Image (cartoon, rainbow, N blue to C red):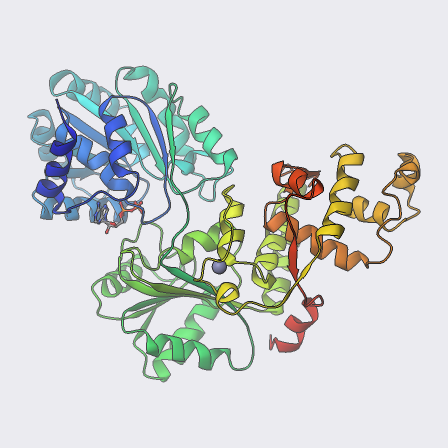
Length: 524
Ligand code: ADP
Ligand code: ZN
C-alpha cells in the first residue's frame, strides 16, 4: 500500500524533487485507485509526472500515447537519465531495435513505454500488447495531448480517434487522458471519444503567475524595442511570426545585428529543423525565430521571453505559445505586438475559407484576439475568462495592472444593456440588443415587436460603438456570456444578475476610439 509519505519519497527517489507541484499529488492518488481520469493542466504544470510516478509505483507497464516522435524521445531520454526504465517504439527505429525493445518489454524490464497512436492501434501491435498485458500487465494507458482527439481542439489528429477501442479491449486498465486545452467543448469531446468511464476530472488553474503579459502597438520602433528586449534577456527567447518569410527576414535582421538567432518553420527540411531545435535547447543559440510550427512538446524550462511579433490566431494559441516562457516557474515576459496589418492579413485568410461555419468561428476568434490586445483590463482576467475561469483582476503582473489606464463607472449602462438581454429572453446577439437600446427601426425589431419593450430606446445617449465596447468589456470580464455555436447569442450569468441587482460595479477604461490608434501607429 502506498502511503502519502511514500509518495513523497518516491518523488525524491525517482525524480529528485522535494515537493509536488499543485495538483500533482491529488492526481497521482486518484490514478493509483485505477480510475479513469481527465487531467487538464496548463503547459508546464507538470503533467508528465502524473503518469510517470504511478507507472513506477504500480505493477506492470504503463503505455504512454504521444503524438510526436521528438517529444517521445525527449521524455524517454530524460527518464533514462534518472535511471528509469523507459523506452519508445516508433517509425524511427529499425526492425532489429524494435525486436530487442519488444523483448525487454515482455521480460518485464520496462516501466514506461511510449508509442505513437498509429503504431499502438496497428494490427501487428495490438496482439503484442495483449501478450504484454497477459505476461507483465498493462498498469495504465496515459494519453498525452488528449485534445488531439477533438476536432474542436487546435491540433486534431484522426488517428487519436481509434484509441477509443483500448477502452473495450483492455477494459480493466485505467485510462489517464492529459491535455493543456481546457475549453468545455474539447473536454467533453475527450471523455466521449476516448470512452472514459466515469472519469475523475481534474482541472488545474490556468493562471501562470510568473508570466508578465504585455501588448505593444507595432510601430516603426518595434524592431528596436524587440532588439532591446532580446538583448536584455540573458536567457532564451522565442519570437513567433506569422509566415515563413517573416521568420526568415527577422532572423537575418537579428543576425545582422549580431544576435545569435536561428529560424524554425515548416519550409526547412527535417534535418535543419531538428538541428536548430537542438541548438536552441542546448543553449548554443539563445534566440529562436519561428512560426507556430515550433514549440509543441518542447520542454525548455528557462525560456524567459516569448515575443509575438505578429498577431496570434486566437487567444488559446496565444496562451499556449506565450506559455512556453517560464516553465520553471521563474518570472518571464510575454510581449505581443499588435498591428492592424496583421488583422488584415488574417481577415484575408479567413475569407479564403470555404466553410461558412469555420469562417464564422475564425472571425469570432480574431475579434477576441483583437479585443484582448486592445483591452485595458487585466490581461489575466481575459485569458482565464476565455478558459471559463473567473479571475478578479489586479494581478500586478501585466501591463494593464501595472500601468492602469483611468476608468469610468458604467454600472448604469451595464444594467440597461443586461436588462435588455433579459427582456428579450437571451435569444439575440449584440447588434440587435444595441439596436433596441438605441431605439432602432430595423425589420427585426418590428418582427419581434421589440418597440414595446421597456428597454427600447433607453440607450440613445450612447453611440453604437460605445455600447459595443461595453458589451465586449462585459464578455471579457465574464460578466456576460456568448454562445460559441456561431450564432453569438448573448446569455446572462450569475455575475450579470449581480450587476442588475446593484451588487456589482462595472468599470471600463476611458479611451474609446482605440481602433484608430492602431491604424495610426501601424507601419504595415
Ligand atoms: P507539462 O507536460 O504539463 O507541460 P512537464 O511535465 O513537461 O509539463 O513539466 C514541466 C517542467 O516541470 C519539467 O521541467 C519538469 O521536470 C518540471 N517538474 C514537474 N514536476 C515537478 C516537481 N514536482 N518539482 C519540480 N519540477 C517539476
Ligand atoms: Zn493583470
